[in-house]
Image (tube, rainbow, N blue to C red; front, top):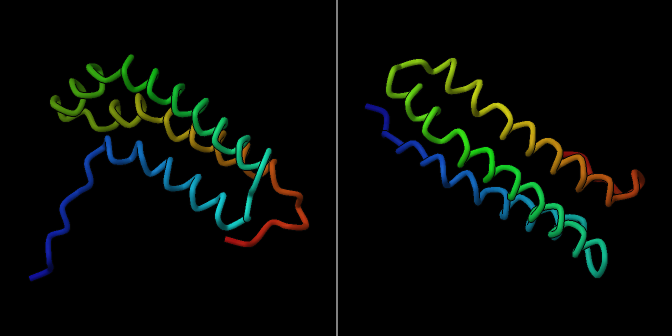
Length: 102
């Protein structure tokens, strides 16, 4: 049968954010102020994410335990939104002429 790939733990996701920014910095060759700005954005948005996760952690766990996955997703939605803001902020560091597809 198919090989079971273990689901990644939610808190792994946290540090996909670090990897994302590292890859972004490398892809666009950011140095100096632009590199610092990228990591400042990461720090800022991670603190928002962590605040949200801590605040709603119990409610999310409760919803999941009760099988209310829709409710759990709704509570986790802001984290996705925060990530979009992070990506948007990073793209602002790159002049459109330098932006690579993908």
